Length: 257
Image (cartoon, rainbow, N blue to C red):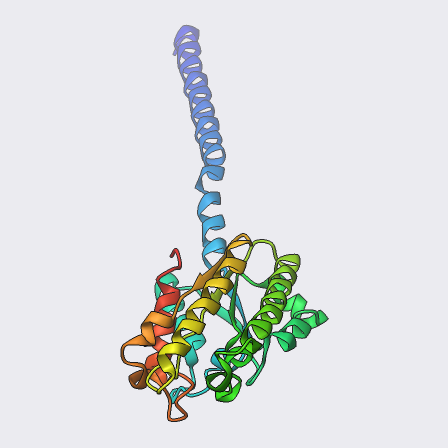
């Protein structure tokens, strides 16, 4: 074999070797260059956000506690079931309601350090107050024509304003739902006159609520007006499970899912 043939074979072999090395380098470069594109950063953030739950604080009286509901849920428990079903998110509830509580007592309660801390964490605050101030165990039926109710209402409205100020001081952003009063005595002899008092009380309460951002007055008077005894517990004052469900559905209808 002459020298020219040997040189030609050697040159071809070197050329193929160079081509193989270039191809290997390109393939390795493409592999490592493509790896970061496989990390779904946006999807990871979305998954973390979807796991976030809702924190609800409930304040007020026996309606917040659910007194009279045979199921033990009250309107707060029924509402939470609705929220869980609609949002598919976990809900953490802190129920601070006290049976028999009046507005002056709630005024003191919202100034407590721990209560303020709970309100500060809340996404939503639920409030029922005023029924014990007005009705006083039925005493209102005896003196609704006197000036006593006007004096009582003035003190109540001052307390209500302070309560809302304290809630907003602790939490400027949470949605607050304030549940209005119904008239449990509407079927009694003086029930119709009492209804006028309750409507006026609700109107003034709604006006106080409207003076604060994101505090919504939730009317309930109409829910009980036509068939009040169908929705009352055996004590003829607190709602039964049907009555509480009506209240919960009214609140739920105001939420933006």
